[in-house]
Image (cartoon, rainbow, N blue to C red; front, side):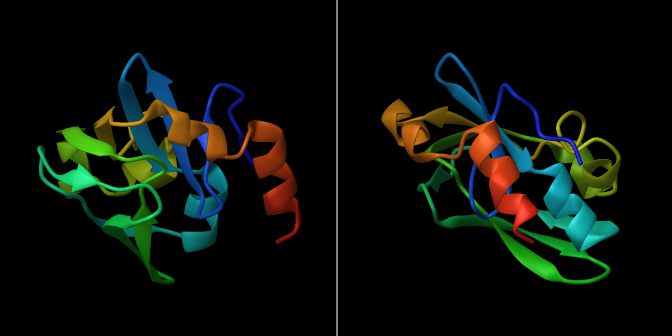
Length: 127
């Protein structure tokens, strides 16, 4: 299982990569492994406002359908449109080509409430 040292994590297994005022969001290696083969990802449109802790989309896999939760609040600035035709990118490269949305972060301080890589590692060890 891969947990990247440069990311922040939610208890719902999303990751956040902050670059300036933009945050890139995806699901973790643990989450994609638990879901199994991802077959569909529903993502919001560019310009949609998302709120920390609230759903912004859904992910459908062979085993289950799950909601995707925003790690921080902001406005969607970019959507990974490749996932519409290649949802399996989430399984192949969840921290790279399988990213989901980018948002312009409204309140960077919300990221302080997210899990560190060490804390997230401890969380998944409990599963």
